[in-house]
Amino acid sequence: MDELITYAPDLGLGFLENVKLALVAMVASLIIGTILVAMRVSPTPVLRAAGTIYVNVVRNTPLTLVLAFSALGLSDQLGLVFSDEPRSNSFWLVAMGLSLYTAAFVCEALRSGVNTVPMGQAEAARAIGLTFSQSLTMIILPQAFRAVVAPLGSVIIAMIKNTTVATAGGFLADAAAVMKETFDQTGASIPIFLGIVVAFMVLTMPIGFFTGWLSRRLAVVR
Amino acid sequence: MTENGDGAPLVRLENVNKHFGTLHVLKNINLTVSRGEVLVVIGPSGGGKSTLCRAINRLETISDGQIIFDGQVLPEEGKALARLRSDVGMVFQSFNLFAHKTIRENVTLGPIKVRGIARDTANKRAMELLDRVGIAAQADKYPAQLSGGQQQRVAIARALAMDPKMILFDEPTSALDPEMVQEVLDVMVGLARDGMTMVVVTHEMGFARRAANRVVFMADGQIVEENTPDEFFTNAQTDRARDFLSKILTH
Image 1 (cartoon, each protein chain N blue to C red):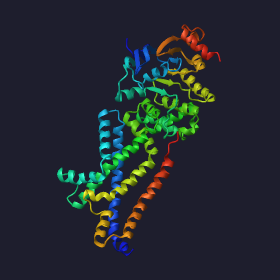
Image 2: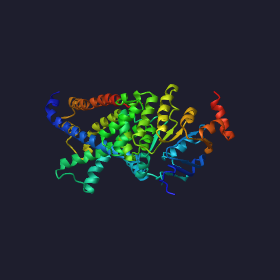
Image 3: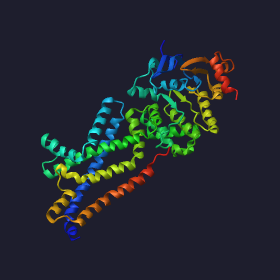
Image 4: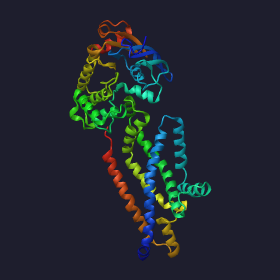
């Protein structure tokens, strides 16, 4: 127990990085995922194909590889630099990789939501003269979102836990990295281990409860 | 002859064909609808009535031939098609009210987003229309809270809110409980009296007799007979129509 108390400040700072990564990735992946689903249901074959290829490539690539590619491929080889400061640069590279990865899952959750919206809703939208993008953003996606709030919650929870893989993208400041560093110095400690587990549960469990409650509240009655 | 003249038809279908795979659902259809006319399309299920109705605002594409609305060949897609659809109201068998929007929002969405009308003006007009179809008191409810007959009357108000040049009715009473059919038909008869151009696919022979200027009988993808309601119901010319009428009118 003592080691947990001793290292709590360091671990806490590390955990704060997980929270920051999760917040950035949550906002970015919801936006990118929505754009992807718009592509996947669009009437334009090129957009549909691009969305399908993106989702299937990214979704089937291990996250550690996505993050390693962000750091080694995009940054080191292709010169994508967010910041001159290495730590900040690796934070944003990991945030980007995690967002792009999670967006594929957000897209697929939303797409299953789109499939719950009856055909007649889109027909009625077109019949009053809404364009495709209007009917998508005003009629289809709002109903799709409401149908998949709970599954989106699961995607977000998985994403939050995935922030612990940040090391793979060269970001060495998150709680998991601090934990490993501590263990390397002092030997493995079950209290530290459990402390981090509890910290993540405090973050993710309310999301599960909240999205469950929200999905019942927002459910579209037909 | 200009298409926009008073005497010119609002809709003209010329040699329209549609295939669903090997199924030939519309066979060489030629049909005109004049301004202010109420055209009722009747016939057995699977005869192509709904497909014909939905082709007029291109919810169904056609295989060949052409459809001319208000002097213009139906655009294939994009903004021009959206603009055309905004001028053609549509009332569906299953109402298709936007499930996540209130009754008022259902009626104002098109005017605000498609016509660019100010929200206040659109709201005021929506309340007038809802009042006209007898639903004003339910304006803030959601579609699922209304009965089928009420939902269908809202759907008519939603179509009217666009100030359409015509309204298509695709079996508007077929999904309703029997006691709700009349309230919807009453609204439709009112529209017909006010001079709205209407194409109505229906099994309601009473409505056809009361409100139609012309009846088109369709079977097997073809227009078999076209006549005034009186002539059609009392003196059908074809065996196919007489056979159909004998099955539905003897009960």
